[in-house]
Length: 476
Ligand code: IMP
Image 1 (cartoon, rainbow, N blue to C red):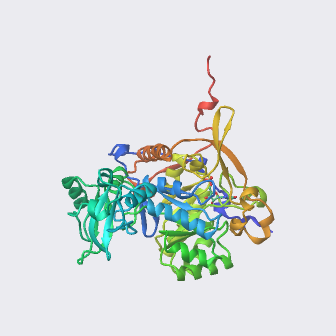
Image 2 (image 1 turned 90 degrees about the vertical axis):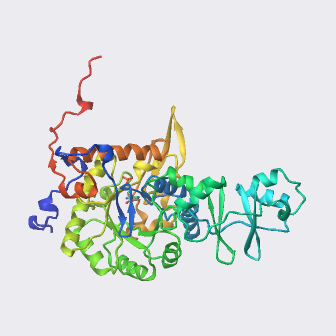
Image 3 (image 1 turned 90 degrees about the horizontal axis):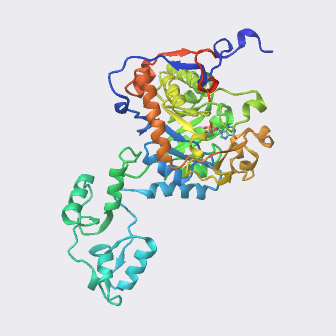
């Protein structure tokens, strides 16, 4: 029997995004100069507080590439085989790099026709020519175009190659390429052995995406969802992804915590745990696990979530954030909190941060973008994309992700599916979200994420606090 004094949630007041507004406060910078720099996990900074959900209608390689280029980070879903998930991670890691390591090369005896064939097939504009691993020349599209195709590459290649050593900076590489009007810069060791290749294309992408979330090698960062009960997948992905996200609906469970402990012992990347919804859950997770990289919080608040309807259990996202904050304060721990579920717009993101989150995870907001892996359909004269819960009937048909939910409820769908309006490119959606969060922060008097967390003044609103545009009568 639940007695009155056992009620959780500050005397049973459990709140959501629509219950609060920011009190407009003094600011001395313009919204455009407000910084959104924050953290995804203990060791991963991000320029924008935006994370995409590990759902099979939201995040695969294409979405994660676009989101990392925009300054956020994507979490690849796990409703597929470990090899398929690893391939999506690799698409992101291969998308850009400062120094390419798996360089395609050609031998001096091969013909120009062979060089041309490789260049066409792999869509590249030049090949380093090597002999016993040593760089002896480079053959480019221009060399091929003006040569007899039957001669050896050795006869057509440029022999006097501008090369650089390891340790070169991006700025130096860019300057050398401009000075010599070249698009490829081979990297060699002290004995002339080829160890990498820098391309002008990759350098210009860096300039184009200045906010991008990159690793120390200049590659885009990406996280991967895992099951706590699949060690092989976790270890495999930990070698290529920047972080792992333990993806279960209810993390505060003895078996889940014990299994996660083993995973953390076997990997070296940040491990984000969740979903969590209570202070006790966060206290348990953080104190029982050696190294928690991040906390994904919010249960039952997702746009395609049926958990609360079916089970009457849940922890609304904003409320879950406050529970996590009080647990971390009690432990004196500094672990980034990711607000997950039900986020509809920039105001919800700003409010999550004001309550203590470092970033917002979104499914609904991103599923409608061009880069999401979900199918598009035409309904009437408008395009729509599918967004489905990972506990929905159709997502569960793949069976792989069904261990996200407790064994008992495996036969009950805890998620549903929706067709949502097509939104176009993710970059445009991010630009709109970022401007909106900056505008919120401007009103709240915060120059950055830290100030928003520390100083924002928030008021509880009643249903009659504001007249809504939709309620206004229109005179035609
Ligand atoms: P959204 O941004 O409101 O669409 O919520 C996305 C979040 O919903 C995900 O990050 C998950 O935490 C959660 N979620 C995904 N699939 C399901 C489901 O089938 N049932 C309940 N929650 C789900």
